[in-house]
Image 1 (spheres, rainbow, N blue to C red):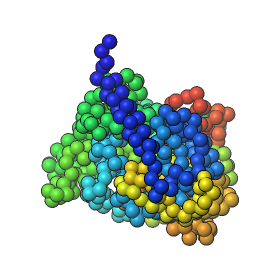
Image 2: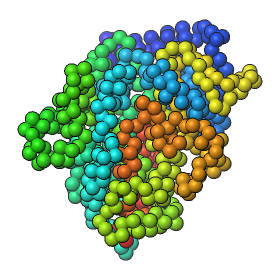
Image 3: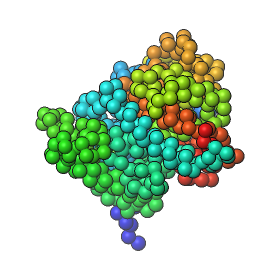
Image 4: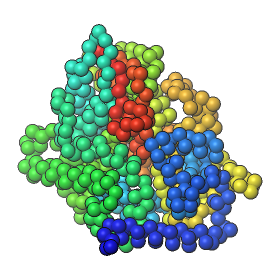
Length: 545
């Protein structure tokens, strides 16, 4: 019986991976000490710890690993590959800042994120990444965020009106809060980022582009093994050929992922073409568009038109930039908001305290201005503490581009009993930086590191934390990464969270229902109502004030 092209390609990649792993493990030079690190026994040579690490409840296993093995240890990947897990501050500083050029996200020509999203800020390396970031930096300035504050309040006011139609003051009503948060952050990113409106908050949203964005990470969470195969295929085939193979892959979720990717690329091209046409007609045409030409994409396109030939971004990169900015900002912020509301629903005193601070700051006005909302101490503390304890993105991968030595702030005792103050690794070693492990490291944050305590942000940080010199770009936590590849929009995200919380806590009260809320591990963690459900949602009881 003939073998189809997709099956043949996947088999070829799998055989190649097995051969490469065999060669890699055949000889281990003594100059490298990394395999002396502690770690759990591999349950199988073929799959390693992949299932335990990346299943829907994988975050529990990650927590156990950090509690058991500390800040530096090994786990097993597919076909015997050894993976270095770190959240030691000094080692992360080396990877993200000091030696960042020697730790790219990949050493292969491409990977699954590049295949699905294209060459944007999340997927590019080196000079290409620096050129893109340089062009995007101005639109995330404080001056631009001041303009966004009013826009965010207008959108959140529509959210408030939408929820008000479904609840009353006399009784609690179940509401899918996560669904509303996703709609709100999507609309904020749509208007502020693209000058495009996805949602009027009256009817249920059904925009094809918006639905693709919402489903991207939940579907990708089920494709961890496919990612390994795709990365090896990039050694032999161009991205377009791999995309064609994946569209006909025997795996249903892989085909679904390609449908999502194709929809995002198609709609991105259409929106960018509309923007280009408006820009060509001048300021009057832009004034009649959503965002009035002050959205990120209009500013980026205008800057690109005026850029030198060396700095200009081709259309392929503009399209990728659009989808990546939307993806990076939507689920991370909406799920962080959902988590915050769940915590406040289970802590009525904290909810009441935050509501009182917000109402006092509003002082009868429709909304809080930018200068004041960013400085509200308890609101800021609640946001920081939630992002510390529940980072939407738990980890990021890196590969060593050459033989490297990683210094450690916290020495590790190896399998042979000897203390290791640095880890020496060979070229092409896979590292996973465990941001969540860093965020609740008791050696840095104290014995209460696993507890949600916003009050910790209202007093000086622990001495150990200050002395560690964390490489994170935000408040000694790693939730937004650090260095030149840190989240470019973290201040944008913070403003979104603060505006949404200030508006809805002024209008509604929240409490838990009797149904269990399950948080699921993935590229971005997401909630479902129970472990049996795969639908991203989080239902809380809501009552109007």
